[in-house]
Amino acid sequence: MTGVTVRVPAKLNLQLAVGPPRADGYHDLVTVFHAVSLFDQVLVEPAGRDGVTVTGEGADRVPADHDNLALRAVAALRATVRDRGAVHVTIAKKIPVAAGLAGGSADAAAALVACNELWEAGLSHQQLATIAGAVGSDVAFALLGGTAVGRGRGEQLTSALAPATQYHWVLAFADGQLSTPAVYAALDRLRGERGDGAGEIARPELDTALMSALRTGNAARVGQRLTNDLQPAAVSLFPALRKTLTAGLELGALGALVAGSGPTCVFLAANPERALELAVSLSGAGVCRSVARVSGPAPGAAVISAG
Image 1: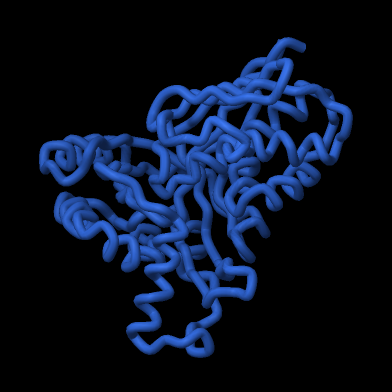
Image 2: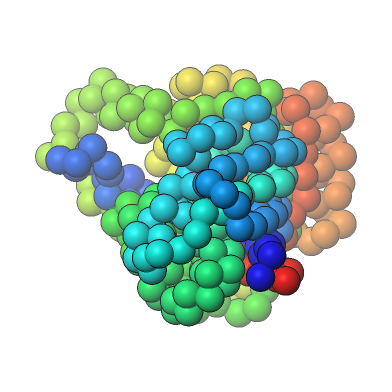
């Protein structure tokens, strides 16, 4: 086999509940993941030594060495299946970098799927998910796709039982990036300033009203339940986001929130026509760098060509 190409989606967090810091520096999470139709493509080919090339959206900000998450995923898979050859990974990005959409995790998931195919390793989805969970917090969800509840660091997944409703979203990309560790640190600092010691921070819990709304397929109800504990921290570090969120709601979005650790802002629209109107209006309002219309849930990492 000369190469395998995998397509992999961006993710949104429809709920992101964050607990106090753990001893290992991570935070316990309860999150509702939702994959959307904004995709990176990852090509894996045999090579003399491992390497990576990145093109497209934000390529200059993606590590091109062994700090690259996709190459770390390759190494993790090789440690499991043993005696597999070196590969070159070519990542064509459409998911913006450091935007709260888990683009790096998506690329890692794609590399796992591609190498499993290229090496004819035959690992099951569950075996790949176990490896993915060790590579990064969001990597396992990028394998799964759809809508799912994540716990732990986000790697403990349960598929959400929901009808095949398509939701229509507008993503407003900011002119800048946010570091995920910096946003979590800001959250801890803000909680400390409010007097929320680790002992007083509530254990994160799944929003049952959100899950009920997803089961009904009612976009208006879903929009009312979008929450993100990281949003105040992201806005504190990137104050312009407040104006973007306000504009989207004033322009008719059913709900709005910061995506993950930001700085992308996410707006839910009632239907494709309203999503188009909202995207055009947000672009004209000058409150973001650019916009994209997407739908979800989208499938997880999948082989689109092999040969």
